[in-house]
Length: 149
Image 1 (cartoon, helix red, strand yellow):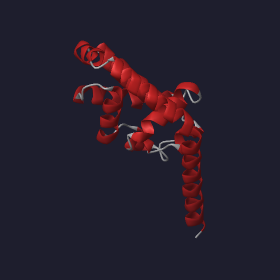
Image 2 (cartoon, helix red, strand yellow; image 1 turned 45 degrees about the vertical axis):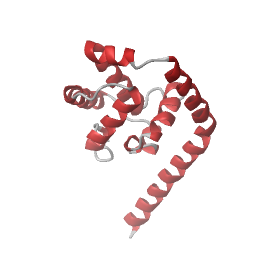
Image 3 (cartoon, one colour; image 1 turned 180 degrees about the vertical axis):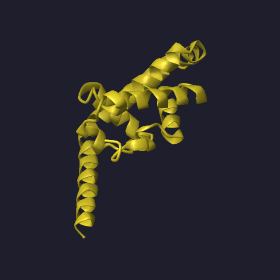
Image 4 (cartoon, rainbow, N blue to C red; image 1 turned 120 degrees about the horizontal axis):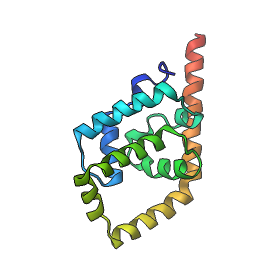
């Protein structure tokens, strides 16, 4: 497990910034450190699922968060992305200052915008997931060919 993932599974700064942006919370270095500590502990007791391999490194691109959130909320509930998302959200909710910021950013316009995004994501998820699977298969095939040479 650690050879495939190792440090790749921990949050890097870019991924954490994307989580912060997606969740509409404030960036906090202490929360970033606590999240990485909890992710390390999580992998001492749990393994990954195939979905995690297919979407590996998807957290580096903000647009993928919408798809990952939708898929992990309804279909892949034990995925690493869902764990990270819930972890960061829970840590921020425990911090009263960040909780107030999250509460203040919620509005009817925001809810309408989220509804439009959700509808778009729901319609385009099969295409996105198919592309992720094709990329995963291509990388796996390429790695196998390199190992044979």
